[in-house]
Image 1 (cartoon, helix red, strand yellow):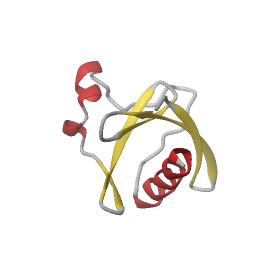
Image 2 (cartoon, helix red, strand yellow):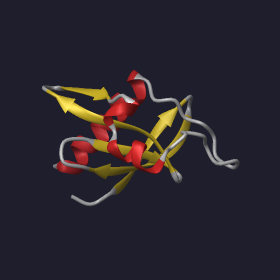
Image 3 (tube, one colour):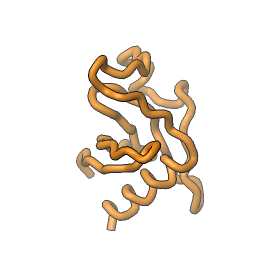
Image 4 (cartoon, one colour):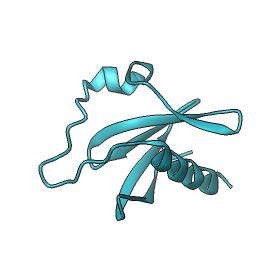
Amino acid sequence: MTAFNIQISHNGEPFILSIMPKDDYFIISHGENIIGATRQEGSDWILMQRDEIEEWRLVGCDNHPAQNSKPIILGAAEINQIAGEIENHMK
Protein backbone atom coordinates (compact mmCIF):
# COMPACT_ATOMS: atom_id res chain seq x y z
CA MET A 1 0.00 0.00 0.00
CA THR A 2 1.27 3.46 -0.84
CA ALA A 3 1.05 6.63 1.23
CA PHE A 4 -2.21 8.57 1.11
CA ASN A 5 -3.74 11.75 2.51
CA ILE A 6 -6.74 12.06 4.78
CA GLN A 7 -8.64 14.95 6.31
CA ILE A 8 -9.69 15.05 9.95
CA SER A 9 -11.26 17.68 12.17
CA HIS A 10 -9.23 18.98 15.12
CA ASN A 11 -10.74 21.67 17.37
CA GLY A 12 -13.31 22.34 14.66
CA GLU A 13 -10.72 22.94 11.95
CA PRO A 14 -9.84 20.63 9.05
CA PHE A 15 -6.35 19.14 8.94
CA ILE A 16 -4.79 17.24 6.06
CA LEU A 17 -2.58 14.39 7.27
CA SER A 18 -0.40 12.00 5.32
CA ILE A 19 -0.59 8.32 6.21
CA MET A 20 2.42 6.14 5.42
CA PRO A 21 1.76 2.41 5.75
CA LYS A 22 4.47 0.25 7.30
CA ASP A 23 4.51 -3.51 7.97
CA ASP A 24 2.25 -3.44 11.03
CA TYR A 25 1.55 0.25 11.70
CA PHE A 26 0.85 3.58 10.02
CA ILE A 27 2.99 6.71 10.35
CA ILE A 28 1.00 9.94 10.63
CA SER A 29 2.55 13.15 9.37
CA HIS A 30 1.38 16.74 9.11
CA GLY A 31 3.33 18.79 6.64
CA GLU A 32 6.90 17.57 6.89
CA ASN A 33 6.62 16.47 10.53
CA ILE A 34 5.94 12.97 11.84
CA ILE A 35 3.34 13.57 14.54
CA GLY A 36 2.68 9.97 15.52
CA ALA A 37 1.89 6.45 14.46
CA THR A 38 -1.01 4.11 15.03
CA ARG A 39 -1.55 0.38 14.83
CA GLN A 40 -4.52 -1.90 15.17
CA GLU A 41 -4.75 -4.22 18.17
CA GLY A 42 -7.80 -6.42 17.73
CA SER A 43 -10.63 -4.04 16.92
CA ASP A 44 -8.93 -1.08 18.63
CA TRP A 45 -6.46 1.41 17.19
CA ILE A 46 -3.75 2.69 19.51
CA LEU A 47 -1.38 5.64 19.37
CA MET A 48 2.14 4.25 19.45
CA GLN A 49 4.85 5.55 21.76
CA ARG A 50 7.69 7.56 20.21
CA ASP A 51 10.29 4.89 21.02
CA GLU A 52 8.25 2.30 19.08
CA ILE A 53 8.53 4.27 15.83
CA GLU A 54 11.76 3.48 13.98
CA GLU A 55 11.40 6.47 11.62
CA TRP A 56 11.24 8.86 14.57
CA ARG A 57 14.59 7.61 15.83
CA LEU A 58 16.16 7.60 12.36
CA VAL A 59 15.36 11.19 11.43
CA GLY A 60 15.48 12.67 14.92
CA CYS A 61 12.00 14.17 14.68
CA ASP A 62 11.33 16.77 17.32
CA ASN A 63 7.61 17.11 16.55
CA HIS A 64 7.80 20.89 16.21
CA PRO A 65 5.38 22.23 13.62
CA ALA A 66 6.64 24.41 10.81
CA GLN A 67 6.27 28.12 11.46
CA ASN A 68 3.31 28.43 9.10
CA SER A 69 1.41 25.36 10.32
CA LYS A 70 -0.89 24.94 13.28
CA PRO A 71 0.05 22.31 15.88
CA ILE A 72 -2.06 19.19 16.20
CA ILE A 73 -2.16 16.98 19.27
CA LEU A 74 -3.26 13.41 18.68
CA GLY A 75 -5.79 12.23 21.23
CA ALA A 76 -8.49 9.56 21.25
CA ALA A 77 -10.85 11.59 19.03
CA GLU A 78 -8.17 12.17 16.41
CA ILE A 79 -6.99 8.55 16.45
CA ASN A 80 -10.60 7.39 16.00
CA GLN A 81 -10.98 9.67 12.97
CA ILE A 82 -7.64 8.55 11.55
CA ALA A 83 -8.47 4.87 12.12
CA GLY A 84 -11.80 5.29 10.34
CA GLU A 85 -10.09 6.92 7.37
CA ILE A 86 -7.43 4.19 7.23
CA GLU A 87 -10.10 1.48 7.35
CA ASN A 88 -12.06 3.22 4.57
CA HIS A 89 -8.90 3.48 2.47
CA MET A 90 -8.14 -0.24 2.92
CA LYS A 91 -11.56 -1.31 1.58
